[in-house]
Image: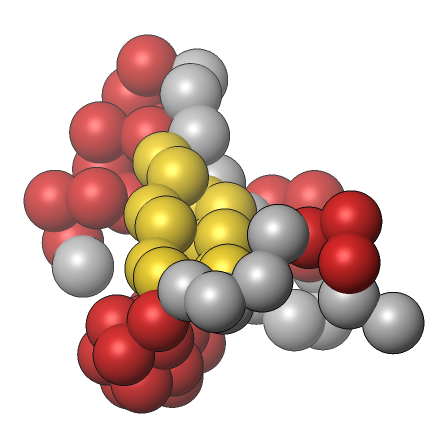
Length: 65
């Protein structure tokens, strides 16, 4: 987490992580760990330098209701 946070802050960028299908569980664990470490700041989301993208394996996004 420290490496992700330091690289994003040093270079002014944003890290993006994607998970599809069974990997969304691991993505949720990653999200919780990033919150605990302060990489994701829910109180001031603008300061967070990470985006997590989740998707379902069996349906395209435009068919979800």
